[in-house]
Length: 375
Image (cartoon, rainbow, N blue to C red; front, side):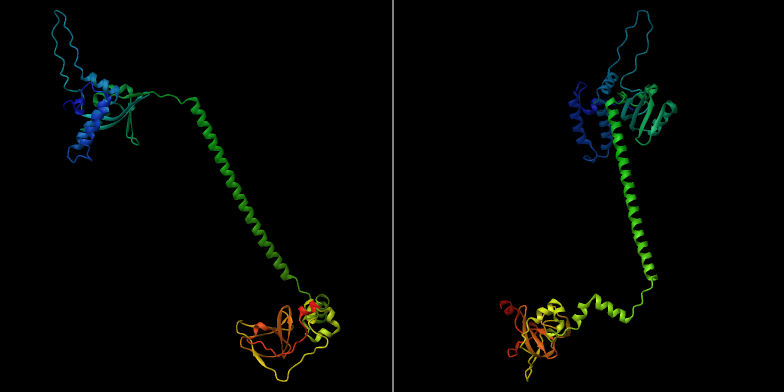
C-alpha cells in the first residue's frame, strides 16, 4: 500500500501549528463525517482523517512521524572505496500491512494499545501472534486492549504506521491519599457497624413486643379458664332481697315512687333529690282535679316516640313510650324548670312541646318552681 502523507490528508503544511491542525480537522470532519456526508466512501475517508489527526495532534508522535518523513543524509564515500547501492526511496513504509492504532500508551514495562483499523485484520493478528510469543503479550477482552512487553516495541513499530506511544510513569499514591482512603474505610466500617447494631436492636424490640403480646393472651386465657372453673355462689331469694335493700335502697324506693301521691308520705324525706324538688311544686291545699268532660289531644309526630314519665321532669323514670299520633286524655298541668308538663288520666306526665295543641282550660296542679323561688 502506498505511503499516506498525514499533512496532505489534513491539507496543512508540515510546519503548521497545533491550532491550524485542529481547525483543519474540524473542517474535514464536518465535510466527510458519515452522519453529514451520504457518500459511500465517507466512512473510509473519515477513518483516514482520524488516523492523521491522532498522529499529528500529539507532539511526540508528530516528532517521530517527521523523522520518518525526513530524507536520509547521504554519506560521502572514501577514495578508493567500492560503490554501494543507493538507499531505498522514502515513498514506501516498512509496514507489513496498512494498520493503525486508536489508543496507545506505555505504562511501566508494557505497552497498552487498541487496534483502530487494519485492511486485513486476520493477517495482522496472525503476524502479531507469530512475532510476539504468548509470554510477551495478552489481550484484555473487557476493555479491548492489547498488553505487550516493551521488548517487542520494534515489532509494533513495523506493524502499525502511527506507533508512537505516550510514556506514562506509574507513580505511587501519595501519603495523604493513603491516609484519606484509610479514614474513609474506617468511617464506612463504623457506619456499617452502627447500622448492624440498629438492625439488631430493632429485631430485639420486635421479639420483646411479640413475647409481651403472647404473655397477655396466655394470661387472659388462663384467667378465663379459672373463672369458668370457679362455681358461682348460690343465693336465695331472701338473701337477694336483703342485699338489695341494704346496698341499693334508693333504687328500690325510686322504682316504687308515685307522684304526687308519695309527696305527703313519711318516706318523702328519704326519696331522691329530683323527687323532692318535684314535690315542692305542689300546694298542700291543691288536689288533683279531673274535669267532668275531658278533652283528648294528639301528640306531635315530630319524634319517633314520646316518653311519658312518672313525674313532671326529665329526671323521673319513663312509664311508657307513645308512638306519633297517639291520643291521650289530659287532667291538669304544672310548670317545672321552665317547661309546662301535662298530667294524663292514668297518672303520667308529658311535656307540652310534644302536643300539637296546647290546652288552655286545664287546672294548675301545684305551683311553678320559679314562683316558689321568688317567695
